[in-house]
Length: 142
Picture 1 (cartoon, one colour):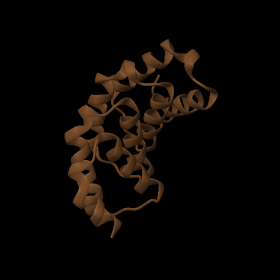
Picture 2 (cartoon, helix red, strand yellow):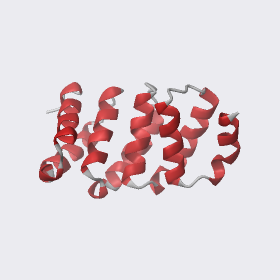
Picture 3 (cartoon, rainbow, N blue to C red):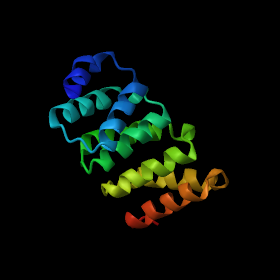
Picture 4 (cartoon, rainbow, N blue to C red):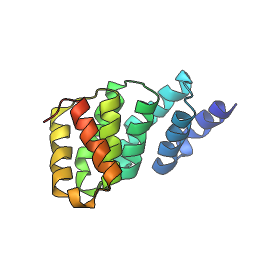
């Protein structure tokens, strides 16, 4: 019933709500494929409107669900790169964790994220730093 309600109102969701809906279903580990397909399609179409936190949450959510969705990750990656300077340390760490968890290895994106992390390393708390380093190691990125 909840999935049907979300599907019927998906067109009315702003980007923040869209990312939070994906997050909620990921936290619950709900694999409702018609819903996930619709959420993916909506995120692909609108990810250029997402703020940094919405991008990171959406990437994290798909990784939490252990769903490899190259089209979605490619679209998110493009939007992340376009807004990279607006990403906070938690957004960087969560996105890197997501990419590592699903083995999404897009070298230009990883290079850009690494350069950003190096420039702003003083802003990272220990957990963000640990997650970022873990992700680079898991992806064998130097």
